[in-house]
Image (cartoon, rainbow, N blue to C red):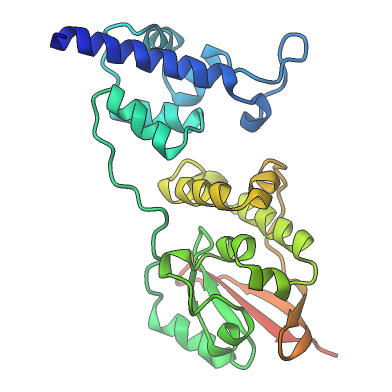
Length: 268
């Protein structure tokens, strides 16, 4: 087969694959209403084109397998909008003539400034920790490590509050109201991540949790939004028994990308 014939076959396969994924997509997953006579699956070409930032004509040509040269950025945008898996994303990149870039599942959070760790340690014996914008556990004190299982023995890239809540059975046992609390945390995370929802860190986290936790996948589709708020929290510690505390949230002015959370004794 000549190079021209191979290129044409790759273009045709790329167009067919994108069309197949587009017509199978669930409209509610993209915050789109049913169309026609209540049809809930299948995106219109113009919807995919608009969400991906390309013209309808250009996207139509792509699905038709015409001799055009899409950029890697455009292929990435379409893969994101069609919610392709990592394997599917790599496949369309290969069809378009690009080599898949290495994409680790999750990134390790950067070290926090020394004064942040000092503050967390000063709050001991009240458990306290620092969250990144993607809810990685960037730092904590000894009391939090004693309260929250998995913090010390988790791989650095897995030290994410959502990952621990939805995948660590010890955390599920620690939270007597796990179902409500897990969904509340997810709603609060979703409220904060809106401006970064297309960023690589969020995409990797979402893909990771969708693939490892059916409960997360179902809760994510509920599209619930809440603000991160101070409130009363309950834990059932395996050795200390029931613990009730007040969750307090702080935003340090000199490190605005971090959120500090502490579990303080109740006033009474």
